Image 1 (cartoon, helix red, strand yellow):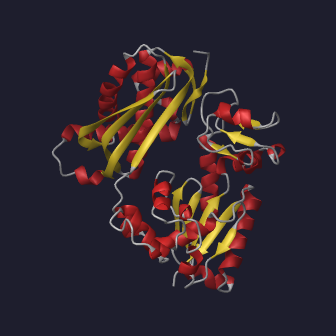
Image 2 (cartoon, rainbow, N blue to C red; image 1 turned 120 degrees about the vertical axis):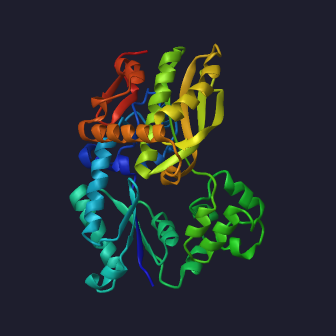
Image 3 (spheres, one colour; image 1 turned 90 degrees about the vertical axis):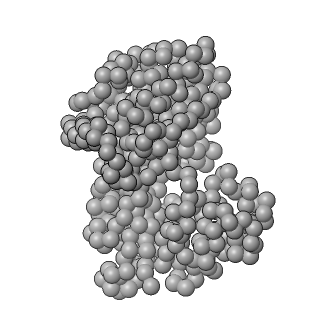
Length: 402
């Protein structure tokens, strides 16, 4: 039987800031922007969460909830990327089988390495936690189980600084009494429907037969039996990548909104290209000054991971919305119907292949010399308004007020 670790860095962005600035420890801390910015919370520490602050909450709402001594920092994705790489490198010193699934999470199959720790996974995990704290200053939580899904659920049960072992063969007993919302994939939209069918705990998913033809019904039953759910996940339709931003001030400048949309589409496409994927559908989101939010969606002629295709479609969706006299507070773009890009290689689309090569070379240049080294002309208006560094534009930090 396998032994799987899921390691999760506690409050990652906030933890990095506290590691670099020990004076922030013990104080409520919000990463994402200053307290008067119009952006959203990227990561609150546990002291801030005690006041009700949550990820994706408006910064100004967080400021109203927190005491005057709370700290607000904008943060640095480049810095967090460096810390993430340091942690993952340390993990490879414990086992060669490390699968990083996000900037702050990784699965490890330690089955073949346990003999180095006397066959004791708790001893191995404790050593892992101690070394990461000593060399990086970061606290982590680790779940240990024979399956990935059980390990992930276990890692989240006793955060921060958690360490939970699910004994082999006890997966069903461990999962059964837990609230169903601990299962990955059960979100705020799904939870009320499950409760309406009497599914409150993970064990209820086995005791009740309702919804067995739905993705979530099959998913829950596989999880409740203590099994991994890779096959079930393949049936899930919803898969998307989105980027949006709230402007420092409400805008009535169409050119600036369009330039921002291009920049956001570029960030989405970089993610697609890094994953070797392409998107078939584009959605544009616009929020006006009165907080009314509208979305428009269109399907691409061919799946793509290039800015030209995504932005061209997104711009056609955006322009009618900009004819509205209301000022714009937020703009965003989402790519969905995502599939592996190599599925398109057999198509005779030489022009698309040339553009894909161009984008890959530009990505490499920006990776080596920084984002600001080479940019598309359409984003030049952003250069005049916002700060830029090697990681990209800081859209919540204008060079001067709009």
